[in-house]
Length: 511
Image 1 (tube, helix red, strand yellow):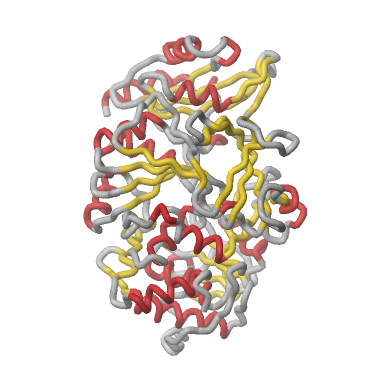
Image 2 (tube, rainbow, N blue to C red):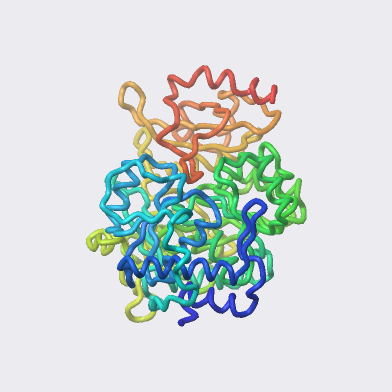
């Protein structure tokens, strides 16, 4: 069994320490040997249903030990798992299953029956009568390092989700990245939606290195319950999206004291949040991860420890082992400020059954070995004075305001660094006359009470007048997607948000 596949690497961990705890969930715990045996049974069941190499198996379950068993079993059968996001509407879940061509659907009792029409064979993993009779031996599902490990669907610009096809090699290279070697990832909390690529880190970094996965209960975690979990299970590392990280940093920054490392990313990381967390937890380091789903979680990282100037934006950092980052101009020539392209072992195989879109985004790498490819991120970056990459904005982040070209990310960075600002998002919109304008949505820090005009004046002291947001909307919190990223589509219209602006500062003072 190849050590460059997920099941091959996992088998090595089972052999080395079979009795070590692999997964915890509440008061339950299973060892590596027990997890291996349970996954083998389910893998044999899947093979009996016709699952083979490159088959896709859909998964819709609550967070639990059974979920971990299911994902591992699919890989042991030689197939790829297709997670269905439990927070999405049933119609979208059904669309993803059909798009992946999954012939088998693994569910638990909580999701049986599902709320959408489909033709897949359903296995209810926590009450299937045939599982107990399956052998616990290795099922022999063979797959190459380039074989398909999972397909995660992300939103597409046309409104149609696209399935990102990730290989075993990409997952194994992520799990064996040297930055994890100091033991800080010995016990990792699994709490992200498993249809979100951060679950690749939460599951496979600990399990492929002999560590322990702690499965969070299938409910929303607030700052207090997060802290309790970290303490109870002696968790050493936790990942939070930038949006959730900012919320916890506001409400209970000391929640991270039990861990050695906090990882965050998926959106612009609020520098004030990093500063607050490090002030409350001086022994903790914060690792900023950057990267789209198409490159197996992250391509660059930047570690902050000790303290951080809340007025300085957190860099994207430098590439991880086995990855390359190119800053290119419109002619694909190297430059110090331009679009970011990434290459290396983490680059996905492409978009499932979308050859045209794959060819558009995954290009031949003119700087790498023959036959290598690079992924076009669409993000604008620059190389900082210390060689670290700095984020400038999304690929579509440039807009024209009063005839001037404006990088929305630059304005957002300035707003985020203003005194009293905890988190901020700047978007481009139009007023009732159709004129393009910028709108800033701001969450204030604890005890802060600047007005919208105070914040506009603060921006005006730094940027030219055409870059000053026409409106500043103060919110109690930024809306988040089910994956924990800022939901820009759910931001209120500035004209209808006036009551929230008046209410927010007083509400935060009362809290």
